[in-house]
Length: 541
Ligand code: ADP
Ligand code: ZN
Image (cartoon, protein in one colour):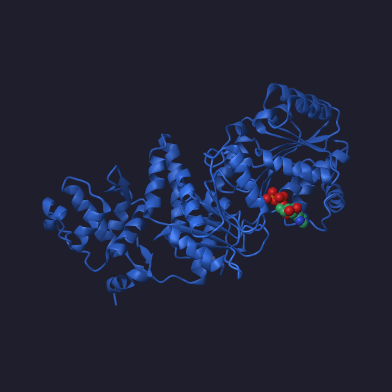
């Protein structure tokens, strides 16, 4: 039996009410259900919490009722599969999963139910699906007209540019070949243009209709602070923003870049009286599971974690997500911060960011062993994130613009709430670049400390030993203090005009320095309290 979109929608509404107990579709769910249940291909880009599951679950039920057979759901996350199948069964839907947690005889039983046509939804891990044995079963179902729909969840896993790349996802292209004519829906909460292209190409979705929901999470307040004493800043943030009248604190996640740092930060938070737990891939499975369970069940725990933690974690009342290290790119930042406030109540995304972060991320890319083309993409993605971190405009506007969405200033980010004062640092940047240039000409490379000493006319031993007080750039930057010079430098590193290299963190100019040196590219920096006097002096009256 075939369905028109109108019939599919009417039937879908009935399922929404009877099976799921909801009165109305949300956002684009109605359009997606009508299109997919009637047999169309779709690519769905919707933020976390937007309601993606119903976009394939309802078409699955509608098509099963129309006698079209079973829906196969590809999911990379075992925990999520279990949750979804459990919830569907409770709602009276015949659902099952196939993954590595099943004993062979259990898996065989599920496959028998599949072949007997008893299932409405089957969730399976991608590596299971692409085995010859399983593909043969799918083809048999397809030949008998009993394969109703293919749903590919977390479809961004197909893209090697993202942080969740799973090579097995690439092999899912075989589904389009082996099961022609079966409608397919791919879903993801990651929506940058490159990822989208990858999904379309690698999953053969050229003919699919694309549904893009707004990626705005209006209840999340974005704040990015300059790193000073990151841990102290974090403790102050939690004390100020997330402490309840009775002294307990709210639930949050603190992301760090390394296992070692996770352990260290968790211990420091505990020492400061916070209920904090570590989570990273170096802990044994039982400990990880225990910490995750406690985080989900108990109130007011802070999970200090690497990005190994979070995908598929559905805790609605995470009140803050803090970053003590810079994520790799904007998708990462968006996904990680998106774990805050899934219940729609106010939540904070807070990040502390400093020069060392920029240097470290750039070095990770340089040392990654990837080919040049790949590195270029990684660098461009990092730069977009750095621009967000350095921005003096609305953070949300910039974040959404990255996903191709235009929006007005939000009124709910640090820069909207307290518009930063800025000063024109173009001239200062030129001085700094000239100084690096002169030092380079003198035959050796130097680190930030020495460059700033020369700029500020500090006659240190090192300066004298090299005779640097004779350079034309000697003491041309007396008007700014050292902290301010470091801020100017960070901005230049963020823009890729200066490279920090080698064991001694020496500074080097790149071609991107040229337009700034020529004064063709203005540079505006935020006025920071302690450097204010010096900056005021540097500004023209
Ligand atoms: P996603 O997979 O996009 O992160 P989910 O599918 O898990 O989102 O849905 C998020 C929450 O919203 C779930 O609790 C779900 O039951 C609820 N939800 C989804 N659609 C609707 C709807 N039409 N009406 C009410 N609640 C909904
Ligand atoms: Zn804003």
